Structures are given as C-alpha cells and as structure tokens.
Amino acid sequence: MRNVEILAMAGWALFLMVGTATAQPAALDEVEESVVRVVGDRGTGSGSVVASERVLTNWHVVKAQRTIAVVSAHTDEKRARMIWSSEALDLALLAVDGLTLPPAALGTMAPETRERVWALGYPGVADAISATHDVTSTEGVIGRLHTAPWDETISQAQALEIIQHSADINPGNSGGPLVNDCGVVIGVNTAGFPSAQGTFVASRITEAVRELRINGIEPNTTDASCEGAAAQAAAIADTARGAAAAAEAAAAAAAETADALGEDTEAAAVAVRRVTWLALGVGAVALLGLLLGLRRPRREVLRVVERASRSVRSLGRAERLGVGRRRAAAGVASGPARFEPTGAPVLLLAATGGKAGDIQVRDAGLGRAAGGFVIGSYDALVDGVAAHPTISRRHARVTRDDRGFYIEDLNSSNGTRVNDVALDPFKPTAIAPGDAVRFGAMEALSVQHVRP
Image (cartoon, rainbow, N blue to C red):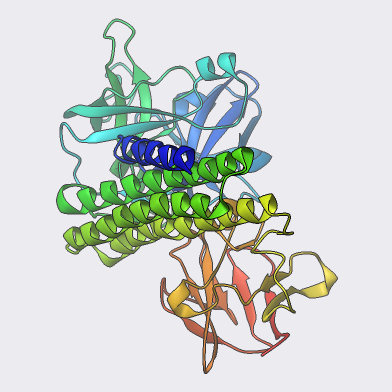
C-alpha cells in the first residue's frame, strides 16, 4: 500500500507540472483541420479552406504550376484549379471539387502588436525530418502593423495591410494561415527575410475577405477579440485539459503498479481517486474562469465551454481505467465500458441502404446529468465514433429524460441536422423513430428505438 501511495503523490506532482505548463491552445486543433498542403509540379506551399471546396493560398505558390493538388492529414490528395488570383496582393483562390474539410474562421478584428500568433503550414524543412501530412505550428508575436505594397515594381502595385510577426515560417509555409490563440485566421503568411532573423510577414486576412466577397463567396468571419478576460478563460480551459490528461496517465500508472506488486486493489482505487479528484478540482476552476469571458460573443463562449467540458469528462475515463485494471488483477473479465455493455442498445441511429455506419447509443451515461452519449470522430473523446472528414472530434450529444430522447450539436464545424433542419449549438432537440439525423456531410442516419 505504501508504494501505491507514493506513486499517487508522484502523480499529483506530475499533474501539477503538466497541468500548469504553457501549452498550444486547444483551438489550434480545430483550425488545423482546415489547413492543407498545396502541391504542384514545380514546388509546394500551404493553404486554408475558406469556403466549401475553396482554398486560399499565395499567388506565388501556384503561378508557375502546370498541375495543382491539395492534401492533408484529413483528406486524400485532390486536384485543384485556380479560379482567381492577384499578383499585387499575392493571393490566389483554388477550387477543389469534393473537398469536405471545414472552412476556417476568418478574423476581421483589428490585430494588435505583442499579440501571440501561430503560423500553421507545411514547411519543406519539416519533411526532411519526417515526411508526413501533419501540420507544423510555430509560435510568435505580432511585432508591427503597417500598410504598403508587396512590390512597388510590379504593374498595378497595390498597398495592403501587412502583419509583421516572429512565428517562424520557411519555404513551404507560403499561403498558410497566421492564427491567434482562439484558432481564428488573421493573416496569410507570405514571406520571411533571411537577412533579418525572426522577422516574417503576412497579409491581413481582411484583404482576402474583401476579394472573396467580390467573387461571390461569403466566408465564415468573426470580429470577436481574442484578448483580455475571454482569452484568460480559454487559457484556463486549456490548462484543465492538459491537467486531466496527466491525471489519467497517473491513474493508469497507479493501477498498473498495484497489479504488478500484488497489493491490495482497494489501495489502487484510493490512488486513482486521489489523482482524479485533484483533476476535477482544476476542471471546476476552469469552468469558474469561463465567467470571465461572458463579454465575448455567445459563439466563442460556447466553444470555450465545450473545451473545458472535455477535461472534466476525461476524469471518468481515468477512474474507469483504474477499475478495469483492478478487475483484471482480480481475474474478473472486463471489456470496453463504452462498446460492450450488457443488454440491447437503447437507441440506434441506423445507416440507410444497408451501409455500415450505425451508431448504437447505450444505457451508460445517457442521463442528462451524466453528460449524455457523445458522438464524434476522435475515439478518445467520445462514446460513439462517426468516421467522416466532416465530423468534428466532439460533434453531437444524445441525452434522455422521462419524455424521450434528445440530440444537440456541440458547436461542430459542419453542423448537425434533424430532418434537414440545422440545430443551434447546445440546444437539445427531441428526436423520435423515423427522424433523419445528419452529422456534417455524412449520410443521414435513421432514428430507431430498439429498447425504450
């Protein structure tokens, strides 16, 4: 028992160190899904999805390409064609048929010097280290804001708003997004200066927004600031998220050590609970911190709330993991709690046409007070997986009360629809047998009650 207690204390220390460390904002995970590599026969660059089947990049990335394609960790390679370009702005718009990645949010708010920013993209130097389609992110701050043309020697030179920043970019980053801590695109990275180490420039995204509208495209824009109390609330939520992950790892280690030493399994349970409840305390602080962000527009506050809820929900997984280890040590069979419950499913969202894709909503966690049954694309964060490129990591939630079943969208990138009616985020909508539920662009699923 003494060894387990020592390990639990070590878990506390690990939890505090990891949970309070500075981390990449969770909002970057969402915007990364909208970042693509632009591939041509004469070089590569980066780009951002700014509307359905539309990608924004630099003019100089695609000007000499005879063939163009886009690819990322979230989509297979797809052919692209340039439908608009401006040498003066060094911007180009690509049409990519069949591209289902979510459009990024474009920030029309005024950026400020010393604001933290992130450059996302596909620098060639990263491929030399490890050739993958994972996005590279670098951190920096805005150093200066000014207005000038990129090159006064070109015909029809045009002055534009330029963001000077210190987030490292390299060949291959051109055309990729410059984003703030809230995961909102505020610029298009364009160039660096080898003679001025640490100095890079991006065109402000408002230049692109204006041209998109001229071309009949209405992008997803926001003018919400990512500063002050709201940004503090987002940072607290990110801290809680990292702390919960550390607590989960510490809980698993405590249970494994108890198994290996053959100690009292109840002592392992105590160790797990100690770390879990400590994480829960930090999660509660994160939620309290959200009150600081109430001046922020509702859409942004809801996003922060959902991020904080992830960390609180992960605590239950840590506890279940410890219980599973203890059962294994005692010779008791234990399967995955989410997918192997006893009895028939309570609710079935069935794919039409006999195709795979059914989602079985189980008894466990269905009560509204317990948080409901979460559906999404990221197995570690949900109870039911819907594998499709337009499905968010945590996309929707099913709950139940005495009157029936409900479904709510969790502020997903591509939305949830019931009988072709789009749901407002975080507003439960009643569903009944025969209703059609669609997550993103996934095939509609038919609601079937298997057991009341």
